[in-house]
Image 1 (cartoon, rainbow, N blue to C red):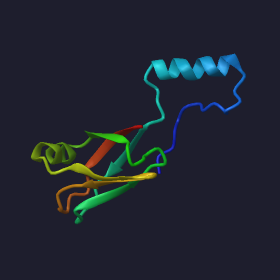
Image 2 (tube, rainbow, N blue to C red; image 1 turned 120 degrees about the horizontal axis):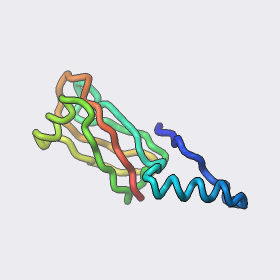
Image 3 (cartoon, one colour; image 1 turned 135 degrees about the vertical axis):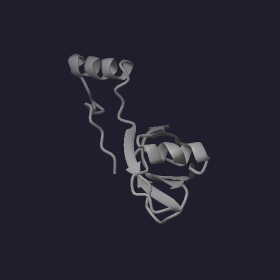
Image 4 (cartoon, rainbow, N blue to C red; image 1 turned 120 degrees about the vertical axis):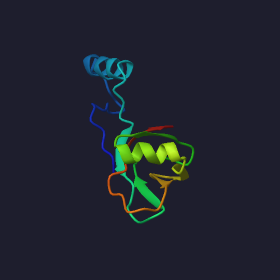
Amino acid sequence: MAEGNFLRLPYEASDPRQVAQVVNNVLDGKLNSTGEFTCTASAASTDVTDYRAGKNSVILLMPTTANASAEVGAGTIYISARNKQSFTVTHANNTQTDRTFGYIVIG
C-alpha cells in the first residue's frame, strides 16, 4: 500500500504555519498521490493496493524501466478495474520481472 510522504493536516487544523506549508507544497506539486508497482511476472494482470484509489479515480502510469516502456509501446498495458482502495493493471503475460511503473491517483 502506498503511503504519503508529506504533512497531513488534522480536520481541526488551526496552526496557520502548518496550513501554509501544506498549501505551498501542493502548489509546488508535492502531492500524496503517487506510488510505484512492478508487473507480476508470468501473469496477465497485477493488483495494486492503494488507499487513495476509488471506482472513479484516474490512474496515470509512467514506465521507469526499459521493459516497462516497451510494454507501453506495445499497447498491452491498461487499467482494467478500479475499486475502493485498489486497482487492477492488465498487461502482457511474460516472465519479465522488471516492468516497473510509477503512478499517480487523482480523484
